[in-house]
Amino acid sequence: QVQLVESGGGLVQPGGSLRLSCAASGLTWDYRAIAWFRQAPGKKREGISCIDSSDDSTYYRDFVKGRFTISRGNDKNTVYLQMNSLKPEDTAVYYCAADMACSYYLTLDFEFWGQGTQVTVSS
Image (cartoon, rainbow, N blue to C red; front, side, top):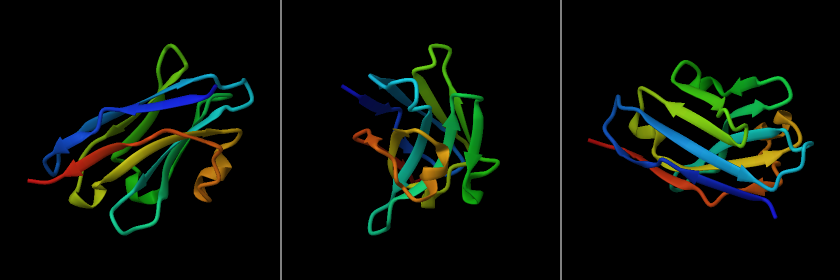
């Protein structure tokens, strides 16, 4: 059974930082892509970043480049999203998801999803 569990969300002031974690279990070797998505109130879900475990290649949307960093833990089953210089518009529920290739993260076409963690950026 595949499980993806996000953690690390919370309330942070503008300009602050948070690190989200995604603990994955039950994935077969071919599900090598873990991506982060977010959905703000009243808006569509959007892809943020993806990491491919086959070569650790990473992908970012322009609106988070230079502020967010995706990485894998030493255990290879945890993926992190380090978020710096947070802005109020980053407020959203953040989800991690798994699939076979990072190319799908732009179309949100990922097979396995976590339940999400709330990130609120506010003073």
